[in-house]
Structure formats: structure tokens, C-alpha cells
Length: 74
Image 1 (cartoon, rainbow, N blue to C red):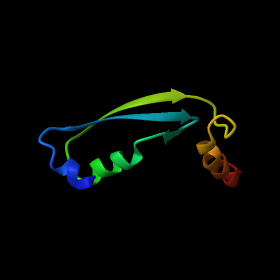
Image 2: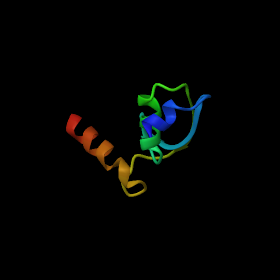
Image 3: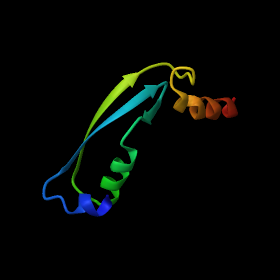
């Protein structure tokens, strides 16, 4: 993927869905494409589509690590 992005003639354009909660942002999909484009050092344009919500692993299991990190700091 990194090589593929490096060969692009114009800027790489990605639409990336994310979930924002209490100061944290979780990329929901396309993280491999995002990292590949970054590592290729291509000209990169990102449209970040963000859903705001509570920090609850009951709503989004990916936020469980965020909850655990906060509990460790208390």
C-alpha cells in the first residue's frame, strides 16, 4: 500500500470515519490506508468524518482501552 500511494501522480485523498469522546479520537476504519499514505510521504488530504459520543465501551467497544487508561490515572 505504501508503494501504491508513493506512485500517485496527485494528492492522495482519503475519507476516514472516526469517533470522538472526551478528548480522544478513535479511527473506526481505514487506519491501514492512513498509515500507508503517511509512510509513503505522498501529498495527503484527509476528510475526517467524526461522530461525537460518550466514552462507553457499551456503545463502542474500542473505547474500552480509553476507559482503562483513564482509570489507571486516578
